[in-house]
Picture 1 (spheres, rainbow, N blue to C red):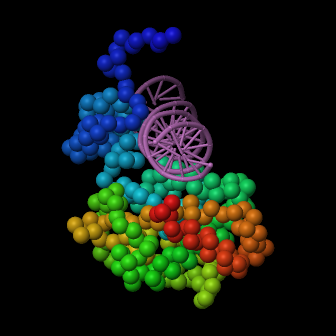
Picture 2: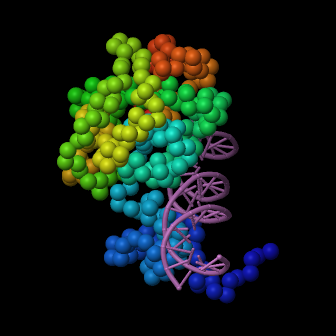
Length: 296
DNA sequence: AACGAATTCAACCGCACAGTT
DNA sequence: TAACTGTGCGGTTGAATTCGT
């Protein structure tokens, strides 16, 4: 049976995907009048949307400083660490990732991180999983950041981790920094990388909640390209037109498609000063997958 | 090439909280 | 103090896209 037609159908609110026209209305209205008073805004901008819908569209999609594209290793690391401290406080976590929205982080967690937890057959909110994150994924991310920083003397076109950029990597509105913070490089220097293997030994105090968190506000205030330790990774730089782009398409935790047996079999909870175990082939396999997402 | 399965992510929903009347 | 309104948050949904066979 068909639903009765609403006599005030003309005033009926729209739902679902936003059209280009609606986006333009919202953008222009906010450009002229600013954000806030969303119900009022929705009405006077001529949008047949709820104020909530307008707010969400603006904050999660239209706002100029929204960063698009895959999360960088640093961002992933930060999410993992912050989530271990705060849990599902997405908006709070998002505050420390400039240009990223709570929705995006939440989606990342649910689609990528929880998937890995499922593959390991452990609860994503369990202590086990937290240990796995801290002892296994974080060191890998850190190590790769470090490795990339070393190999980045290659030009972007030479660097396999820096594929050609697509237009949607361009982030026009991220303000360029003037001076880097002093101690972020040191922070990552504290991660002692073993010389000739894929082992990463991470001091437990570094991965304790406070240590990384304490660095976070500085990271949040400035884009990652500011940090000497990250500068040569090859995923961020100035585009020819002066805008700031983020090329992170090859970094994705999704690549950590761990075989539960080999992964957990080499993961020793009892040695957990984050001493990574030593089957190089395991890490080779994992990290190869991790850093080569483009072709996937 | 076609189709079903799996994945991603924009958008919606309900609730909570703060401010105002 | 209660009622109302605006805003923000976290959980969930479902259409679109990608992947695998």
